[in-house]
Length: 408
Image (cartoon, rainbow, N blue to C red; front, side, top):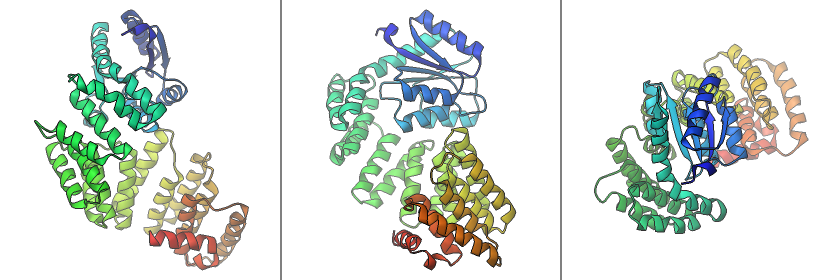
């Protein structure tokens, strides 16, 4: 491997640590090194340029941390199959450990460390990831079918990371729609021992085949085998929700969040399920955690605030609900559909006996609906709020959306 051609991104909130890491990496043989001080800057760099290696501190000050950076970078696809992510940490908290188990960076380096240790960890990770460069390139330019073709020669060599390559093949096959290959690959991986990822992937295949009984069995087996494998918890919770088993979904999500609490989507799912069951003592803290995590990650969503507002109203806390509406307006100012979300919040916050406020708000809603076609996501939220005040019949456009949601 020609280290001089590798692009390296260093992420640390301390200038002194960034300088030390740059010196170590330069001494190892890297020449193209960029350093940033926050997770947000790191995401911006990843969106603008392809990096082969990230060396990132776990704690990054007030913004997103290293775990959240890894999660978001993978979600956005700005890290490829061949990208190496090395986490640097002095942390040993349960939250950090569980995050490590869930998001699995390629290597960990615990402070204090030497250049030789850093070199060894990066080198080992590069030897695993370097052969995946053509697979990542094929996936980006031609799609999963081409990536599978590029992966087959690597598997034929019977490498030491064979199980990792089989996991990639199973996921690529599933994305391509080849359920038989995905399932067969999982079975091949489990020839000697059961594996949580393979059991979970078989559950996904079973779901795609509409065999929900088998899917649930696979997810539960995965959870029993490896309790910290969070994907199985998430899949099982989603399956329970689809079947109307809301109490079971809530139980699964609570257990998952006790193990790994920093997942934004999992917090949102818990809030939604708890609210549906009327368990606002669970829903409100989950909405607040969702808002905090999303804000930390630079991903504020007005829907989180509206969920919180609805819960506060359900408990009769109209004052805090109105305060949360103002907060939504301030923190979600870049949201293109914010006027619709805010209008929904204002309808929820109406006092039941305030006819004058309802009349004024109805006039504002008429004006809003005349501007442009109603966006679906925010429109559905607005339709629900208007229906809550028994005003939906006055707004045919919203009534259609509301009826479609009921049918779904």
